[in-house]
Image 1 (spheres, helix red, strand yellow):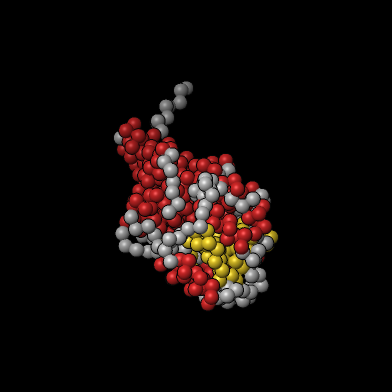
Image 2 (cartoon, one colour):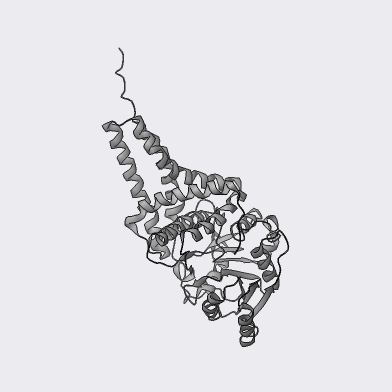
Length: 395
């Protein structure tokens, strides 16, 4: 007796493995990070007995420095700290301003002047190397001139990360004692589509590098809020492996440090964050993101594979949809396609809304699907533009 023929499966089921891949990333990395235990408040007793060197590199950033430096010098930290300003070939009055600060804050504020960068070297990496060499303390905390700490306890909370319980693979908590602390740095909320897209991209990127670091698989950090020990920097021979690449003073250093078995902690609650003014034009943001993405080709193969699977599952979910509709416009196919898209939209909300709330980042919830689509279009455009290999510039 012949069995009746089964009806053909709708082509829309081609999207199911992609959706399951995105669900796995949410369950494995994003959800555990968003639901992690609250970090200890600055008012609670903590290990605050190690002095810190705060390192800041600036190129023609006088206006930003006038706002940032007082916020840094007024950080509340009992063990003491020094602020090292690296004046990287500035043509404004940064040098004069820094000299005045050195007189007002002797022992607390120090100036390192870079007048020339060796041919072929990344200017920022060369400047940072000189600043680290001048630092007196073992623990180093980095930010950028266009950043602002979100609280006077930023320094205290970030350095406590060196003593925080460490993640390990599997998401459980390991022992204490970190060599590197990865923080979060957001962008100020402003009106307009560009600002919404910048903040969405920042959240999406943070979900990846913070979520993976929390699960014991760190692969990058952001130089706007990053700390590590001098021993960690020396173990990687500084920026030697990528000193001639413009980008990578943060993420490629994390790559090298992890390869040297550095222990990485995550500190990301709102009082330990920094915030920056976002790019105000599409062109400025395009150049900024293109520079950042250019370092990705130097990531470890396992990290590139994980990121490719995550971004690829998003991208092909969009690309395959019109093809699936072209293959079959049947009622069954359309209904199953609608169900899959609804499930993905709900997953988008489930992944990013709790994370945005935990990080204290305002998020235009209703616009999430559109922002997600627009970002993936731009992500493809950035990737294609990097194949052109046009020169990248640091200011």
